[in-house]
Length: 360
Ligand SMILES: [Zn+2]
Image 1 (cartoon, protein in one colour):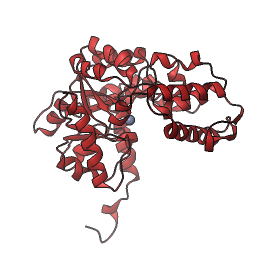
Image 2: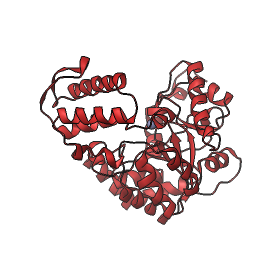
Image 3: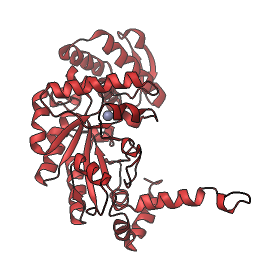
């Protein structure tokens, strides 16, 4: 909080001076894309405030946007309108969710439905089809819940050993080792849940504190997924294995096809938009995305969207909101103030080529 305060004071002053309002006017024709992940069922936002956002925070954000004249559009409409020539309706915004968390469907989509705001869920299909708690997240949550202390782990094969859980590197090493051990030995939801509970027990975290029954680390079921479009939430592609294979177009194409097959196989509309997992992408992606008919792809780079010509529609900026984002930072980003500041800084920092002798 102490490092955030000077920035917040600057933003507060800028808003007081009317610069947020001015920024909204100057950037009104640019499209905004917002990103959220899961909702909050217990205390997951304390563990990872970017991955889990409460219904209350989402509701507050959406109400603020509606009160300032933002217009919520579907992802498909937003991209189409941005590509079309001519004047555009001001302050168009798209809301997206990544991954496919159960808590997205149970906590967040209802908030948007009640406000008549459309949304898009980028589904990662391997985790969805497996149908058990997301190992990487559940194991890391368990370690967070255990607090910083020394640990001697036994009965986990290659992950056995001594760990100092006060050290981030040690927590990471433990998480990776235990995830690998569960992946190698557990098959099916029952076995995975049993292994997660055994790990929690070895860290002194009670089963009630892990609360797997709440499904807070699960993805949606097929039935829940198929109900989302009726609530204004379209289903698009987040790839199959939740990893962008940099520099491997054939692997990428295969990953996209597997995701598409899973989505279409459930009777849902063929995906037309893609979201890079963990924000990782490469210049080679656009050729594969174009060949497979994907009309847009979103990154995790914050920014507003103007011209989407060339291959820009396959590298769209997007703002990752969450519990770790101060309301003033959110307002600054959505108003376009942050984007104008970033552009100004880029302009100041760029070399003054025109002033150098001998250059055209
Ligand atoms: Zn993701």
